[in-house]
Length: 66
Image (cartoon, rainbow, N blue to C red; front, side, top):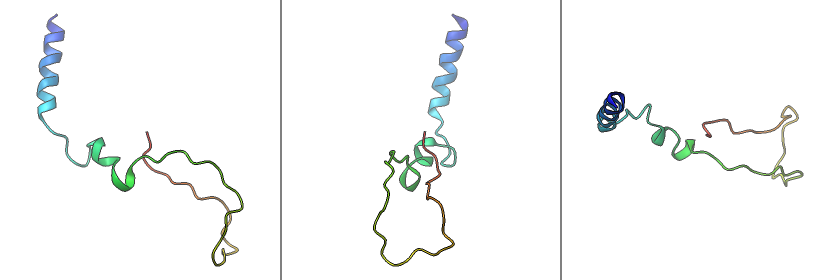
């Protein structure tokens, strides 16, 4: 019971202090860094112009996506 009271007091104090922008997950995974939905693989897409011969592979977006 004492531990529950201590934990409640600690949590209420902690919630009063906002996180800095550099560590607040609501800011860190927002905007351009927001999670992206899964996309199906699509083959033979139309290309305007030419793709250089040295480009060989796939494009994968890498970022925060919980």
